[in-house]
Image 1 (spheres, rainbow, N blue to C red):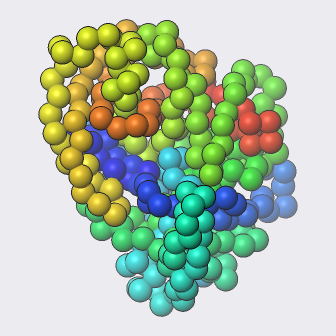
Image 2 (cartoon, one colour):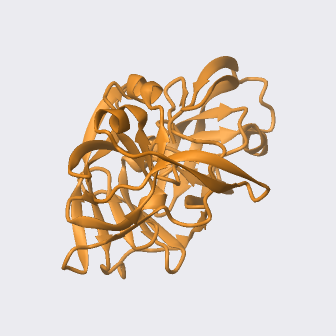
Length: 294
């Protein structure tokens, strides 16, 4: 997702809750393909990860954001290349219907991956480009990859997508809800549900979880900080804290800094993800996370 709480950013069109995957992609000719990512360090050593895509033959810089569902394309990219925009109805939180602008490109590919069909939400990404210090042509996350097994190597900067063996990796329960990835993470032994968000720079825990772990929050120095999303600016209370331990998949990290935020979701950010390899198996609803070998 594309938001920033101090050093935290993710993109989250709040009204988008799709019930189907927006892009269906297939490996070309082989059982799986390897797609190079591009790593961009821009803020206090926090990286962002990018893919080079082709939309109707035009090159697009795509931010890899596992905290997003529907793939998005920037208004600037659409206008620059004269892509056709249509207004479509989608389900909004299971209650109402909302109309959004989308494109349905004739051709979409990333490396050797080719789309059978694709839908991109048209998005104003000026905030995202400003924060990332790089032009954001589009954002891709779970909605792009969740119809097949994939593994993201953050240290070596590549994605493996398709049918490949994961027999030697411990796998843990995973919830995929409207294309968002949710897993169990333990903070100082206290487990809770976390959104896996490679577009979130710093791991974030809710006030409710912080109270369960720390009890008394009076020692935390809360301040109001600007929260920038693709569709709004708002203020949230946040404080920095160091947790005795964080356990995610097969990784245990001691004395790990997090943001305690007045926000309902817990988020596992790129500060953790950059340490290892994330494997997602949508068929069995399991995930693995292991440290990269030095």
